[in-house]
Length: 129
Image 1 (spheres, one colour):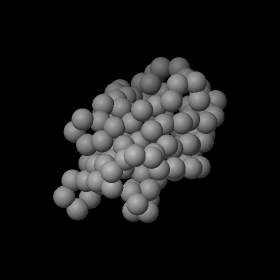
Image 2 (tube, helix red, strand yellow):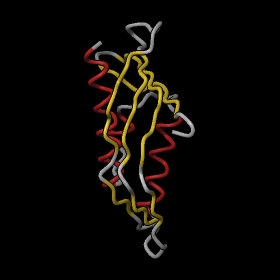
Image 3 (cartoon, helix red, strand yellow):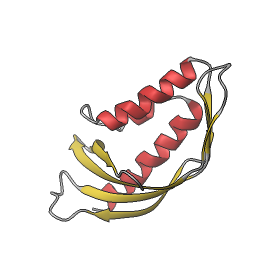
Image 4 (tube, helix red, strand yellow):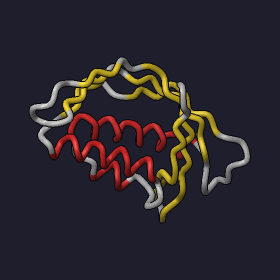
């Protein structure tokens, strides 16, 4: 399962790149067709950047990836803990900045195999992290 754990970290790195560039193509390529959280992240970023806005952030840093017991090797799940750096979000070209302080975020990330690659099948964001 080391490859699946590494992929989970890579997906977060790709989310960080999409956040600061507005280019969500690779993020969506790594996300399964039923991953609504993945699509929501991409949609929010697309909306910001298409309106002339942008996001300033050092992104998410994964601090822990722990396998969830009982998951199959083809569909592994992980409890992921990430530290989120402070963010400045400019929702559109002339909109005032929205500032977020950062902090810690827990989530459960479920993967699936598609041919010879991994995809994020689903993400459950922990509330109140």
